[in-house]
Amino acid sequence: MSNVSAGELVAPTLAKSGVDCVFALNGGHIQSILEGCLDLGIRLIDVRHEAAAGHAAEGYAKATRGLGVAVVTAGPGFTNVLTSLANAFVDRTPVLYIAGGSPLSAADKNVLQSGFDQVAVAKPIAKWAHRIAAPTDIPRLITYAIRVATSAPTGPVFLEIPWDLMLAQVDKDQIVIPHAAHDSGCPPVPAKIDAALALLRGASAPAVIAGVEVYRSGAWSELRTFAESSGIPVFTEYEALGTLPCDHPLWMGTNFQLARLKPKHKPDVVLALGARFGWNTPRFETFSGKIIHVDSDPLEIGRVNMPTIGIVANPKGTLQLLQERSGARFPDWSAWTAQLREAVGMVRSEAAAAAASSGESHPHPFAAAEALNEAATDAVIVADGAFTKHWLEDAVRRNRPGCYFSHGSFGAMGIGFGLAMGVKAARPDEPVLCVTGDGAAGFTLAELDTMVRHKMPIVVVVMNNHSWGAIDPVQHPEGSNRPAGIRLGQARYDDIAKAFGGRGSHAKTVEEMKAAIKEAFASKQPTCINVEVGMGGLPPAFKAATLGISMAGLT
Ligand SMILES: Cc1ncc(C[n+]2csc(CCOP(=O)(O)OP(=O)(O)O)c2C)c(N)n1
Image (cartoon, rainbow, N blue to C red):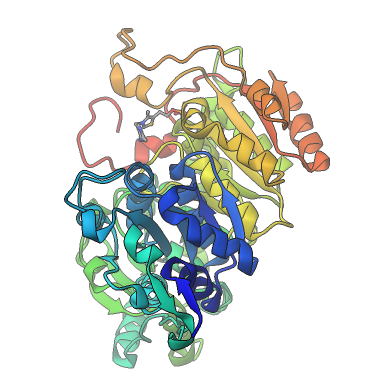
Protein backbone atom coordinates (compact mmCIF):
# COMPACT_ATOMS: atom_id res chain seq x y z
CA MET A 1 0.00 0.00 0.00
CA SER A 2 1.35 3.46 -0.83
CA ASN A 3 -0.86 6.27 0.34
CA VAL A 4 -0.74 9.67 -1.35
CA SER A 5 -3.09 12.64 -1.28
CA ALA A 6 -5.55 12.47 -4.19
CA GLY A 7 -4.33 15.85 -5.48
CA GLU A 8 -1.02 14.14 -6.22
CA LEU A 9 -2.80 12.03 -8.85
CA VAL A 10 -3.55 15.05 -11.03
CA ALA A 11 -0.07 15.64 -12.46
CA PRO A 12 0.61 11.96 -13.31
CA THR A 13 -2.81 11.80 -14.98
CA LEU A 14 -2.03 14.86 -17.08
CA ALA A 15 1.40 13.45 -17.94
CA LYS A 16 -0.11 10.12 -19.03
CA SER A 17 -2.18 11.96 -21.65
CA GLY A 18 0.84 13.85 -22.91
CA VAL A 19 0.49 17.17 -21.06
CA ASP A 20 3.93 18.73 -20.73
CA CYS A 21 3.09 22.33 -19.88
CA VAL A 22 0.65 23.86 -17.39
CA PHE A 23 -0.23 27.55 -16.91
CA ALA A 24 -1.20 28.47 -13.39
CA LEU A 25 -1.41 30.97 -10.58
CA ASN A 26 -1.03 29.31 -7.20
CA GLY A 27 -3.31 29.04 -4.20
CA GLY A 28 -3.66 26.70 -1.23
CA HIS A 29 -6.40 24.69 -2.91
CA ILE A 30 -4.21 23.59 -5.82
CA GLN A 31 -0.75 23.20 -4.26
CA SER A 32 -0.57 19.45 -4.70
CA ILE A 33 -1.23 19.82 -8.44
CA LEU A 34 1.53 22.37 -8.89
CA GLU A 35 4.02 20.41 -6.80
CA GLY A 36 3.11 17.29 -8.76
CA CYS A 37 3.96 19.13 -11.98
CA LEU A 38 7.40 20.00 -10.60
CA ASP A 39 7.96 16.39 -9.47
CA LEU A 40 7.16 15.05 -12.94
CA GLY A 41 8.96 17.68 -14.97
CA ILE A 42 5.76 19.16 -16.41
CA ARG A 43 6.67 22.73 -17.31
CA LEU A 44 4.88 25.05 -14.89
CA ILE A 45 4.43 28.61 -16.15
CA ASP A 46 3.20 30.72 -13.26
CA VAL A 47 1.57 33.95 -14.39
CA ARG A 48 0.49 37.16 -12.67
CA HIS A 49 -3.26 36.99 -13.33
CA GLU A 50 -5.44 33.94 -13.93
CA ALA A 51 -6.82 35.50 -17.12
CA ALA A 52 -3.35 35.17 -18.60
CA ALA A 53 -3.10 31.53 -17.46
CA GLY A 54 -6.29 30.80 -19.39
CA HIS A 55 -5.29 32.74 -22.47
CA ALA A 56 -1.82 31.17 -22.45
CA ALA A 57 -3.43 27.72 -22.31
CA GLU A 58 -5.54 28.79 -25.31
CA GLY A 59 -2.41 29.95 -27.14
CA TYR A 60 -0.67 26.68 -26.35
CA ALA A 61 -3.64 24.70 -27.67
CA LYS A 62 -3.80 26.82 -30.82
CA ALA A 63 -0.06 26.57 -31.50
CA THR A 64 0.14 22.81 -30.91
CA ARG A 65 -3.29 21.97 -32.37
CA GLY A 66 -3.64 20.02 -29.14
CA LEU A 67 -4.66 20.56 -25.54
CA GLY A 68 -3.89 23.55 -23.30
CA VAL A 69 -4.13 23.30 -19.51
CA ALA A 70 -4.78 26.06 -16.97
CA VAL A 71 -4.89 25.44 -13.21
CA VAL A 72 -6.38 28.11 -10.95
CA THR A 73 -7.41 28.38 -7.36
CA ALA A 74 -10.96 28.36 -5.99
CA GLY A 75 -13.23 31.43 -5.98
CA PRO A 76 -11.46 34.50 -7.38
CA GLY A 77 -8.94 32.38 -9.28
CA PHE A 78 -11.87 30.70 -10.98
CA THR A 79 -13.75 33.93 -11.72
CA ASN A 80 -10.58 35.51 -13.14
CA VAL A 81 -10.24 32.75 -15.73
CA LEU A 82 -13.85 32.95 -16.93
CA THR A 83 -13.19 35.27 -19.89
CA SER A 84 -10.71 32.76 -21.20
CA LEU A 85 -13.17 29.90 -20.74
CA ALA A 86 -15.81 31.84 -22.68
CA ASN A 87 -13.32 32.79 -25.38
CA ALA A 88 -12.23 29.17 -25.77
CA PHE A 89 -15.88 28.12 -25.93
CA VAL A 90 -16.64 30.56 -28.71
CA ASP A 91 -13.39 29.65 -30.51
CA ARG A 92 -13.83 25.90 -29.92
CA THR A 93 -10.34 25.70 -28.42
CA PRO A 94 -9.53 22.52 -26.48
CA VAL A 95 -8.46 23.74 -23.04
CA LEU A 96 -8.73 21.90 -19.74
CA TYR A 97 -9.42 24.34 -16.89
CA ILE A 98 -8.94 22.85 -13.43
CA ALA A 99 -10.00 24.91 -10.42
CA GLY A 100 -9.82 24.21 -6.73
CA GLY A 101 -13.11 24.24 -4.91
CA SER A 102 -14.36 24.64 -1.38
CA PRO A 103 -14.37 21.39 0.59
CA LEU A 104 -17.44 19.29 -0.22
CA SER A 105 -17.98 18.87 3.51
CA ALA A 106 -18.19 22.65 4.06
CA ALA A 107 -19.45 24.04 0.75
CA ASP A 108 -22.45 25.65 2.48
CA LYS A 109 -20.51 27.23 5.37
CA ASN A 110 -19.17 30.47 3.85
CA VAL A 111 -15.62 29.16 3.86
CA LEU A 112 -12.69 30.90 2.19
CA GLN A 113 -12.86 31.42 -1.61
CA SER A 114 -16.29 29.89 -1.73
CA GLY A 115 -19.96 30.84 -1.67
CA PHE A 116 -21.29 29.94 -5.12
CA ASP A 117 -21.55 27.02 -7.50
CA GLN A 118 -18.53 27.23 -9.83
CA VAL A 119 -19.70 24.34 -12.01
CA ALA A 120 -23.07 26.02 -12.60
CA VAL A 121 -21.26 29.19 -13.68
CA ALA A 122 -18.91 27.29 -16.01
CA LYS A 123 -21.55 25.05 -17.59
CA PRO A 124 -23.01 27.40 -20.23
CA ILE A 125 -19.52 28.32 -21.46
CA ALA A 126 -17.87 24.91 -21.44
CA LYS A 127 -18.24 21.86 -23.63
CA TRP A 128 -18.38 19.92 -20.36
CA ALA A 129 -18.15 21.07 -16.72
CA HIS A 130 -18.07 18.84 -13.68
CA ARG A 131 -17.22 18.70 -9.98
CA ILE A 132 -15.27 15.60 -9.03
CA ALA A 133 -16.97 13.96 -6.06
CA ALA A 134 -14.74 11.01 -5.15
CA PRO A 135 -10.94 11.14 -4.79
CA THR A 136 -10.33 7.94 -6.71
CA ASP A 137 -12.28 9.36 -9.67
CA ILE A 138 -9.66 12.04 -10.33
CA PRO A 139 -7.63 10.12 -12.95
CA ARG A 140 -10.68 8.78 -14.79
CA LEU A 141 -12.48 12.13 -14.97
CA ILE A 142 -9.43 14.18 -15.95
CA THR A 143 -8.72 11.71 -18.74
CA TYR A 144 -12.34 11.82 -19.84
CA ALA A 145 -12.31 15.63 -19.78
CA ILE A 146 -9.23 15.66 -22.02
CA ARG A 147 -10.93 13.30 -24.44
CA VAL A 148 -14.03 15.50 -24.53
CA ALA A 149 -11.98 18.68 -25.09
CA THR A 150 -9.82 17.31 -27.88
CA SER A 151 -12.45 15.32 -29.79
CA ALA A 152 -14.23 17.03 -32.68
CA PRO A 153 -15.92 19.43 -32.38
CA THR A 154 -13.27 20.51 -29.89
CA GLY A 155 -13.93 22.84 -26.98
CA PRO A 156 -13.01 23.78 -23.42
CA VAL A 157 -13.79 21.65 -20.39
CA PHE A 158 -13.89 22.58 -16.74
CA LEU A 159 -13.21 20.44 -13.69
CA GLU A 160 -13.52 21.51 -10.08
CA ILE A 161 -11.64 19.46 -7.51
CA PRO A 162 -12.88 20.24 -3.99
CA TRP A 163 -10.18 20.86 -1.40
CA ASP A 164 -11.06 17.96 0.90
CA LEU A 165 -10.90 15.58 -2.06
CA MET A 166 -7.51 16.94 -2.98
CA LEU A 167 -6.25 16.15 0.55
CA ALA A 168 -7.94 12.75 0.90
CA GLN A 169 -5.55 9.81 1.15
CA VAL A 170 -5.76 7.19 -1.57
CA ASP A 171 -3.80 4.02 -2.21
CA LYS A 172 -1.83 4.80 -5.34
CA ASP A 173 -1.25 1.12 -6.07
CA GLN A 174 -4.98 0.56 -6.48
CA ILE A 175 -5.42 3.26 -9.09
CA VAL A 176 -5.02 2.78 -12.80
CA ILE A 177 -4.36 6.00 -14.71
CA PRO A 178 -5.92 5.86 -18.20
CA HIS A 179 -4.67 7.58 -21.34
CA ALA A 180 -6.90 9.96 -23.30
CA ALA A 181 -7.30 9.27 -27.00
CA HIS A 182 -9.36 11.63 -29.12
CA ASP A 183 -11.67 11.38 -32.10
CA SER A 184 -10.99 13.74 -34.94
CA GLY A 185 -14.55 13.64 -36.26
CA CYS A 186 -16.45 11.50 -38.72
CA PRO A 187 -15.47 11.08 -42.34
CA PRO A 188 -18.05 12.36 -44.82
CA VAL A 189 -20.69 10.23 -46.49
CA PRO A 190 -19.63 9.58 -50.16
CA ALA A 191 -23.09 10.48 -51.55
CA LYS A 192 -22.77 13.96 -50.01
CA ILE A 193 -19.35 14.38 -51.55
CA ASP A 194 -20.74 13.48 -54.97
CA ALA A 195 -23.54 16.02 -54.52
CA ALA A 196 -21.00 18.66 -53.49
CA LEU A 197 -18.86 17.90 -56.53
CA ALA A 198 -21.87 18.19 -58.82
CA LEU A 199 -22.74 21.58 -57.33
CA LEU A 200 -19.17 22.82 -57.63
CA ARG A 201 -18.82 21.60 -61.22
CA GLY A 202 -21.98 23.47 -62.17
CA ALA A 203 -20.68 26.73 -60.69
CA SER A 204 -19.36 29.52 -62.85
CA ALA A 205 -17.60 31.28 -59.97
CA PRO A 206 -16.76 28.87 -57.12
CA ALA A 207 -14.62 29.63 -54.08
CA VAL A 208 -13.37 27.79 -51.01
CA ILE A 209 -13.44 29.27 -47.54
CA ALA A 210 -10.79 27.61 -45.41
CA GLY A 211 -11.94 27.89 -41.82
CA VAL A 212 -9.82 27.51 -38.74
CA GLU A 213 -10.63 23.80 -38.58
CA VAL A 214 -8.61 23.30 -41.78
CA TYR A 215 -5.61 24.38 -39.72
CA ARG A 216 -6.64 22.50 -36.59
CA SER A 217 -7.30 19.24 -38.39
CA GLY A 218 -3.94 19.52 -40.16
CA ALA A 219 -5.58 19.55 -43.59
CA TRP A 220 -3.34 22.08 -45.35
CA SER A 221 -1.70 19.68 -47.78
CA GLU A 222 -5.15 18.30 -48.68
CA LEU A 223 -6.39 21.88 -49.18
CA ARG A 224 -3.53 22.67 -51.50
CA THR A 225 -3.96 19.48 -53.50
CA PHE A 226 -7.68 20.10 -53.91
CA ALA A 227 -7.23 23.79 -54.81
CA GLU A 228 -4.54 23.03 -57.37
CA SER A 229 -6.37 20.15 -59.00
CA SER A 230 -9.71 21.96 -59.13
CA GLY A 231 -8.38 25.47 -59.77
CA ILE A 232 -10.89 26.85 -57.23
CA PRO A 233 -9.65 30.03 -55.50
CA VAL A 234 -9.33 30.07 -51.71
CA PHE A 235 -10.19 32.63 -49.03
CA THR A 236 -9.11 32.03 -45.44
CA GLU A 237 -10.36 32.74 -41.98
CA TYR A 238 -7.64 34.61 -40.07
CA GLU A 239 -6.41 31.69 -38.00
CA ALA A 240 -6.30 29.57 -41.14
CA LEU A 241 -3.87 32.01 -42.81
CA GLY A 242 -1.03 30.07 -44.38
CA THR A 243 -3.01 26.84 -44.79
CA LEU A 244 -2.75 27.80 -48.43
CA PRO A 245 0.40 29.97 -48.51
CA CYS A 246 -0.44 33.61 -49.06
CA ASP A 247 2.03 33.70 -51.96
CA HIS A 248 0.12 30.89 -53.74
CA PRO A 249 -1.64 32.09 -56.92
CA LEU A 250 -4.94 30.57 -55.77
CA TRP A 251 -4.93 32.35 -52.39
CA MET A 252 -7.21 35.33 -52.84
CA GLY A 253 -7.43 36.89 -49.41
CA THR A 254 -9.26 36.76 -46.11
CA ASN A 255 -12.97 36.35 -45.46
CA PHE A 256 -13.09 40.05 -44.56
CA GLN A 257 -11.74 40.89 -48.02
CA LEU A 258 -14.23 38.52 -49.63
CA ALA A 259 -16.98 40.39 -47.76
CA ARG A 260 -15.91 43.66 -49.36
CA LEU A 261 -16.22 42.46 -52.96
CA LYS A 262 -19.00 44.01 -55.00
CA PRO A 263 -21.94 41.58 -55.49
CA LYS A 264 -21.03 41.13 -59.16
CA HIS A 265 -17.56 39.87 -58.16
CA LYS A 266 -18.76 37.43 -55.52
CA PRO A 267 -18.66 33.66 -55.94
CA ASP A 268 -21.83 31.79 -56.87
CA VAL A 269 -20.93 28.63 -54.94
CA VAL A 270 -18.89 28.56 -51.74
CA LEU A 271 -17.37 25.46 -50.20
CA ALA A 272 -16.93 26.42 -46.52
CA LEU A 273 -14.62 24.02 -44.71
CA GLY A 274 -14.53 23.99 -40.91
CA ALA A 275 -15.67 27.59 -40.59
CA ARG A 276 -18.26 28.86 -38.16
CA PHE A 277 -20.49 31.34 -39.98
CA GLY A 278 -20.99 34.67 -38.19
CA TRP A 279 -18.44 37.36 -37.35
CA ASN A 280 -15.69 35.34 -39.04
CA THR A 281 -17.61 35.31 -42.35
CA PRO A 282 -18.91 38.88 -42.67
CA ARG A 283 -21.87 39.76 -44.88
CA PHE A 284 -22.81 36.14 -45.46
CA GLU A 285 -26.32 36.61 -44.07
CA THR A 286 -27.16 38.29 -47.35
CA PHE A 287 -25.14 35.98 -49.60
CA SER A 288 -27.20 35.01 -52.63
CA GLY A 289 -25.01 32.15 -53.87
CA LYS A 290 -25.08 28.51 -52.84
CA ILE A 291 -23.19 27.13 -49.89
CA ILE A 292 -21.70 23.74 -49.17
CA HIS A 293 -20.97 23.81 -45.45
CA VAL A 294 -18.64 21.21 -43.96
CA ASP A 295 -18.23 21.13 -40.20
CA SER A 296 -17.81 18.46 -37.57
CA ASP A 297 -20.49 20.11 -35.42
CA PRO A 298 -24.07 19.59 -36.68
CA LEU A 299 -25.16 22.60 -34.60
CA GLU A 300 -23.17 24.92 -36.86
CA ILE A 301 -24.70 23.79 -40.14
CA GLY A 302 -27.47 26.20 -41.08
CA ARG A 303 -27.07 28.43 -38.00
CA VAL A 304 -26.56 31.60 -40.05
CA ASN A 305 -27.04 30.44 -43.62
CA MET A 306 -29.03 27.40 -44.62
CA PRO A 307 -26.59 25.61 -46.94
CA THR A 308 -27.61 23.90 -50.14
CA ILE A 309 -25.53 20.97 -48.92
CA GLY A 310 -24.54 20.45 -45.28
CA ILE A 311 -21.87 17.89 -44.51
CA VAL A 312 -21.18 16.87 -40.92
CA ALA A 313 -17.59 15.72 -41.17
CA ASN A 314 -14.06 16.84 -40.52
CA PRO A 315 -12.44 19.03 -43.20
CA LYS A 316 -9.42 16.77 -43.68
CA GLY A 317 -11.44 13.66 -44.51
CA THR A 318 -13.76 15.76 -46.66
CA LEU A 319 -10.92 17.19 -48.73
CA GLN A 320 -9.41 13.74 -49.17
CA LEU A 321 -12.69 12.29 -50.40
CA LEU A 322 -13.44 15.28 -52.63
CA GLN A 323 -10.09 14.77 -54.29
CA GLU A 324 -10.50 11.02 -54.58
CA ARG A 325 -14.03 11.06 -56.02
CA SER A 326 -13.47 14.03 -58.34
CA GLY A 327 -10.92 12.21 -60.46
CA ALA A 328 -9.39 15.70 -60.72
CA ARG A 329 -11.98 16.55 -63.40
CA PHE A 330 -13.17 20.14 -63.13
CA PRO A 331 -14.19 22.88 -65.55
CA ASP A 332 -11.64 25.55 -66.44
CA TRP A 333 -12.16 28.41 -64.01
CA SER A 334 -9.05 30.40 -64.91
CA ALA A 335 -11.02 33.35 -66.35
CA TRP A 336 -13.08 33.64 -63.15
CA THR A 337 -9.94 33.33 -61.01
CA ALA A 338 -8.20 36.11 -62.94
CA GLN A 339 -11.24 38.37 -62.61
CA LEU A 340 -11.49 37.61 -58.89
CA ARG A 341 -7.80 38.36 -58.33
CA GLU A 342 -8.27 41.79 -59.87
CA ALA A 343 -11.39 42.50 -57.81
CA VAL A 344 -9.66 41.48 -54.55
CA GLY A 345 -6.71 43.64 -55.54
CA MET A 346 -9.01 46.65 -55.64
CA VAL A 347 -10.38 45.76 -52.22
CA ARG A 348 -6.89 45.39 -50.82
CA SER A 349 -5.85 48.76 -52.14
CA GLU A 350 -8.50 50.49 -49.95
CA ALA A 351 -6.36 50.23 -46.83
CA ALA A 352 -3.23 51.48 -48.58
CA ALA A 353 -5.19 54.42 -50.00
CA ALA A 354 -6.50 55.30 -46.54
CA ALA A 355 -2.96 55.23 -45.18
CA ALA A 356 -1.62 57.38 -48.03
CA SER A 357 -4.26 60.06 -47.60
CA SER A 358 -4.00 60.30 -43.81
CA GLY A 359 -2.94 63.78 -42.73
CA GLU A 360 -1.81 62.65 -39.26
CA SER A 361 1.72 63.35 -38.09
CA HIS A 362 2.16 59.90 -36.51
CA PRO A 363 2.48 56.82 -38.74
CA HIS A 364 -0.77 55.42 -40.03
CA PRO A 365 -1.61 52.05 -38.39
CA PHE A 366 -1.85 50.34 -41.79
CA ALA A 367 1.61 51.59 -42.81
CA ALA A 368 2.92 50.28 -39.48
CA ALA A 369 1.07 46.98 -40.01
CA GLU A 370 2.57 46.47 -43.46
CA ALA A 371 6.03 47.16 -42.10
CA LEU A 372 5.44 44.71 -39.23
CA ASN A 373 4.35 42.03 -41.65
CA GLU A 374 7.55 42.47 -43.62
CA ALA A 375 9.85 42.83 -40.64
CA ALA A 376 8.61 39.57 -39.17
CA THR A 377 8.02 37.32 -42.18
CA ASP A 378 8.93 34.16 -40.28
CA ALA A 379 7.31 35.06 -36.99
CA VAL A 380 4.15 33.78 -35.44
CA ILE A 381 2.00 36.88 -35.03
CA VAL A 382 -0.46 37.26 -32.16
CA ALA A 383 -2.81 40.22 -32.50
CA ASP A 384 -4.83 42.05 -29.86
CA GLY A 385 -6.57 45.41 -29.76
CA ALA A 386 -9.31 46.39 -32.17
CA PHE A 387 -8.39 48.86 -34.91
CA THR A 388 -4.82 47.65 -34.49
CA LYS A 389 -5.99 44.15 -35.33
CA HIS A 390 -8.24 45.21 -38.21
CA TRP A 391 -5.51 47.22 -39.95
CA LEU A 392 -3.02 44.43 -39.33
CA GLU A 393 -5.34 41.81 -40.74
CA ASP A 394 -5.55 43.65 -44.04
CA ALA A 395 -1.75 43.64 -44.22
CA VAL A 396 -0.77 40.30 -42.77
CA ARG A 397 0.46 37.47 -45.01
CA ARG A 398 1.73 34.13 -43.72
CA ASN A 399 3.11 31.38 -45.91
CA ARG A 400 2.94 28.55 -43.41
CA PRO A 401 0.01 27.43 -41.24
CA GLY A 402 -0.39 28.25 -37.56
CA CYS A 403 1.36 31.60 -37.72
CA TYR A 404 -1.43 34.03 -36.94
CA PHE A 405 -3.62 34.01 -33.82
CA SER A 406 -5.99 36.58 -32.37
CA HIS A 407 -9.30 36.97 -30.64
CA GLY A 408 -12.14 35.71 -32.76
CA SER A 409 -15.78 36.60 -32.58
CA PHE A 410 -15.72 36.96 -28.78
CA GLY A 411 -13.59 40.07 -29.31
CA ALA A 412 -11.95 39.92 -25.89
CA MET A 413 -9.50 42.78 -25.52
CA GLY A 414 -6.47 41.87 -23.43
CA ILE A 415 -5.84 38.31 -24.50
CA GLY A 416 -2.67 39.05 -26.48
CA PHE A 417 0.06 38.67 -23.85
CA GLY A 418 -1.44 35.39 -22.61
CA LEU A 419 -1.92 33.96 -26.11
CA ALA A 420 1.63 34.94 -27.07
CA MET A 421 3.09 33.25 -23.99
CA GLY A 422 1.20 30.06 -24.80
CA VAL A 423 2.45 30.14 -28.39
CA LYS A 424 6.04 30.77 -27.28
CA ALA A 425 5.89 27.97 -24.71
CA ALA A 426 4.66 25.61 -27.42
CA ARG A 427 7.15 26.69 -30.07
CA PRO A 428 10.22 28.03 -28.25
CA ASP A 429 12.35 28.09 -31.38
CA GLU A 430 10.03 30.28 -33.42
CA PRO A 431 9.99 34.09 -33.23
CA VAL A 432 6.75 35.36 -31.68
CA LEU A 433 5.49 38.89 -32.27
CA CYS A 434 2.58 40.19 -30.21
CA VAL A 435 0.93 43.25 -31.78
CA THR A 436 -1.54 45.03 -29.55
CA GLY A 437 -3.49 48.21 -29.01
CA ASP A 438 -2.46 50.28 -25.98
CA GLY A 439 -5.86 49.69 -24.39
CA ALA A 440 -5.68 45.93 -24.77
CA ALA A 441 -2.08 45.89 -23.53
CA GLY A 442 -3.15 47.41 -20.23
CA PHE A 443 -5.21 44.39 -19.16
CA THR A 444 -2.26 42.11 -18.44
CA LEU A 445 0.86 44.32 -18.39
CA ALA A 446 2.29 42.39 -15.45
CA GLU A 447 2.74 39.43 -17.80
CA LEU A 448 5.83 41.22 -19.08
CA ASP A 449 7.23 40.01 -15.77
CA THR A 450 6.16 36.42 -16.57
CA MET A 451 7.92 36.67 -19.93
CA VAL A 452 11.11 37.82 -18.18
CA ARG A 453 10.98 35.23 -15.37
CA HIS A 454 10.27 32.39 -17.77
CA LYS A 455 12.76 33.58 -20.38
CA MET A 456 10.22 33.93 -23.15
CA PRO A 457 11.73 36.36 -25.67
CA ILE A 458 8.44 37.60 -27.08
CA VAL A 459 8.53 40.88 -29.00
CA VAL A 460 5.53 43.01 -28.04
CA VAL A 461 4.60 45.95 -30.26
CA VAL A 462 2.15 48.35 -28.66
CA MET A 463 0.39 50.42 -31.33
CA ASN A 464 -0.05 53.42 -29.11
CA ASN A 465 -2.80 55.79 -30.21
CA HIS A 466 -3.41 56.81 -26.60
CA SER A 467 -7.04 55.73 -26.95
CA TRP A 468 -9.46 52.88 -26.90
CA GLY A 469 -9.28 53.50 -30.64
CA ALA A 470 -12.13 51.40 -32.03
CA ILE A 471 -14.62 52.94 -29.65
CA ASP A 472 -13.90 56.46 -30.85
CA PRO A 473 -16.01 56.34 -34.05
CA VAL A 474 -18.64 54.13 -32.43
CA GLN A 475 -19.11 56.77 -29.80
CA HIS A 476 -19.42 59.76 -32.06
CA PRO A 477 -19.87 58.65 -35.65
CA GLU A 478 -21.27 62.03 -36.66
CA GLY A 479 -18.12 63.84 -35.65
CA SER A 480 -19.24 65.16 -32.28
CA ASN A 481 -16.41 65.32 -29.84
CA ARG A 482 -17.43 64.29 -26.39
CA PRO A 483 -15.20 61.35 -25.54
CA ALA A 484 -16.73 59.25 -22.77
CA GLY A 485 -13.93 57.19 -21.35
CA ILE A 486 -12.00 56.57 -24.55
CA ARG A 487 -8.81 58.60 -24.12
CA LEU A 488 -5.74 57.05 -22.51
CA GLY A 489 -2.65 58.85 -21.25
CA GLN A 490 0.89 59.23 -22.53
CA ALA A 491 2.03 55.91 -21.08
CA ARG A 492 5.41 54.52 -22.11
CA TYR A 493 4.84 50.78 -22.30
CA ASP A 494 8.51 50.24 -23.16
CA ASP A 495 9.47 51.56 -19.73
CA ILE A 496 7.18 49.05 -18.07
CA ALA A 497 9.02 46.18 -19.78
CA LYS A 498 12.32 47.63 -18.57
CA ALA A 499 10.98 47.86 -15.02
CA PHE A 500 10.34 44.12 -15.07
CA GLY A 501 13.86 43.41 -16.34
CA GLY A 502 13.05 43.16 -20.05
CA ARG A 503 14.00 45.41 -22.96
CA GLY A 504 12.07 48.40 -24.20
CA SER A 505 12.25 50.85 -27.07
CA HIS A 506 10.24 53.74 -28.35
CA ALA A 507 9.49 54.37 -32.04
CA LYS A 508 7.98 57.44 -33.63
CA THR A 509 8.38 56.38 -37.24
CA VAL A 510 7.87 53.19 -39.19
CA GLU A 511 11.61 53.00 -39.87
CA GLU A 512 12.42 53.26 -36.16
CA MET A 513 9.86 50.54 -35.46
CA LYS A 514 11.36 48.21 -38.06
CA ALA A 515 14.87 48.69 -36.65
CA ALA A 516 13.59 48.11 -33.11
CA ILE A 517 11.90 44.85 -34.15
CA LYS A 518 15.11 43.60 -35.75
CA GLU A 519 17.13 44.42 -32.63
CA ALA A 520 14.51 42.88 -30.39
CA PHE A 521 14.55 39.52 -32.16
CA ALA A 522 18.37 39.56 -32.21
CA SER A 523 18.51 40.28 -28.46
CA LYS A 524 16.55 37.09 -27.58
CA GLN A 525 15.00 38.94 -24.65
CA PRO A 526 11.41 39.89 -23.97
CA THR A 527 11.00 43.34 -25.47
CA CYS A 528 8.23 45.91 -25.60
CA ILE A 529 8.29 48.45 -28.43
CA ASN A 530 6.06 51.44 -27.89
CA VAL A 531 5.06 52.77 -31.32
CA GLU A 532 3.34 56.12 -31.70
CA VAL A 533 0.59 55.72 -34.29
CA GLY A 534 -2.23 57.92 -35.53
CA MET A 535 -5.90 57.04 -35.16
CA GLY A 536 -6.06 56.14 -38.85
CA GLY A 537 -9.82 56.36 -39.41
CA LEU A 538 -12.10 53.37 -39.91
CA PRO A 539 -10.31 50.22 -41.12
CA PRO A 540 -12.06 48.84 -44.22
CA ALA A 541 -12.18 45.38 -42.61
CA PHE A 542 -14.07 46.82 -39.64
CA LYS A 543 -16.57 48.43 -41.98
CA ALA A 544 -17.15 45.03 -43.55
CA ALA A 545 -17.77 43.31 -40.26
CA THR A 546 -21.22 42.14 -39.38
CA LEU A 547 -21.85 43.62 -35.99
CA GLY A 548 -25.31 42.13 -35.61
CA ILE A 549 -26.71 45.59 -34.97
CA SER A 550 -27.21 48.57 -37.19
CA MET A 551 -24.50 51.12 -36.52
CA ALA A 552 -25.43 54.28 -38.34
CA GLY A 553 -22.61 55.77 -40.34
CA LEU A 554 -20.27 52.87 -39.73
CA THR A 555 -21.18 49.93 -41.92
C1 LIG B 1 -12.56 42.86 -22.40
C2 LIG B 1 -13.19 43.88 -23.30
N1 LIG B 1 -13.53 45.08 -22.79
C3 LIG B 1 -14.05 46.04 -23.60
C4 LIG B 1 -14.29 45.76 -24.93
C5 LIG B 1 -14.89 46.84 -25.85
N2 LIG B 1 -13.87 47.30 -26.79
C6 LIG B 1 -13.88 46.89 -28.08
S1 LIG B 1 -12.70 47.57 -28.97
C7 LIG B 1 -12.11 48.46 -27.67
C8 LIG B 1 -10.95 49.41 -27.82
C9 LIG B 1 -9.63 48.72 -27.96
O1 LIG B 1 -8.61 49.68 -27.84
P1 LIG B 1 -7.09 49.33 -28.07
O2 LIG B 1 -6.75 48.04 -27.45
O3 LIG B 1 -6.27 50.49 -27.67
O4 LIG B 1 -7.02 49.08 -29.62
P2 LIG B 1 -7.25 50.08 -30.84
O5 LIG B 1 -8.70 49.96 -31.24
O6 LIG B 1 -6.91 51.47 -30.36
O7 LIG B 1 -6.36 49.56 -31.86
C10 LIG B 1 -12.87 48.20 -26.53
C11 LIG B 1 -12.65 48.80 -25.21
C12 LIG B 1 -13.97 44.47 -25.40
N3 LIG B 1 -14.22 44.11 -26.65
N4 LIG B 1 -13.38 43.57 -24.58
